[in-house]
Length: 300
Image: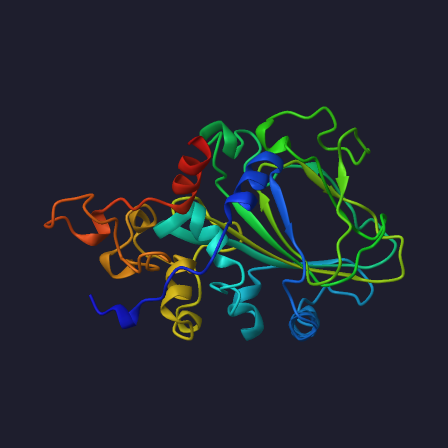
C-alpha cells in the first residue's frame, strides 16, 4: 500500500460528545466557522439562489444537491471540519445522503412541522434502534439569540421514539428546545430526533447549510447519480463519498478501488490488525468504526 495516496480520518467525536449525542440526539459545537467561512458560504448561497427560475428575493428557498452547484459547496463533501463525525459512525461505507441550504426570510409560511428525517412508514430506528442511519451536519450562518427567528426546535432524547402525539403539527410541546446559537456554530444531529422550525418574525434572513450522511447502501435523498464530468473535478475521497455507482450492488459492496476511504486516525493503518488472515483482501475486511470503539469505552 502506498500510504501517500491516503488521508488519515479527520477528527470526530470525543467520548464526551459521543455520550451527549447518544443521550440527546444532537450536539452543538460553537466557534466552528470563522467570519471568513461564514461570508464565503453565504456568498455561495447567494450565487446559487439566483438560478432557480421560481425563486423570488425575500421568499423562502430550499435547494438540494448543492455540492454539484458550486465549488464552495463541493469542498464540504469531505471537509475535515465535520466529515470525521460521519466517518466515526458509517466508516468505510460513508456516503453523502443529501446536501442542501435554506433561506428563511421574515414573514410568510416559512416554518416546518414536527417530523423525524428519513423514512416515515418504517422509520430508520425500526431497523437501527441504536445507531443512526443518517446524521445531519448543520452550519449556522446567522446569530440566532432569540426565539421566533426561524429557529430549529428539537426534543432532546426523542430519537429513541417512533411516535409523537404532535406529529404533523407545529404546536409547542413539553421538553422541546428552541435552538438559539451564535453564528459559526455547527450541529451534529441524529436523523431520528423529532424537530420542527419556528417562524421567522425577526428582521434577518436565516441562512443554513446542511450536509447529511448515511451508509452507502441507504438510498440518497437528492440525486440518483452525479454528473460524470463533475465527478472528475473531485478528489478521491469526495468522489467515493458521493457513491455514484452504475452497478447497483456496489452500494453494498464497493469496488476494491474505494478502500481504504481513510486510514485509521490513531494507527494510520488501512485495516484492523490481526483481525483476518493475510490472504483476505482489503475490501472484503470488516473494519471497526469509531462508534463501536467509543461504545466499548462507555461499557467499561
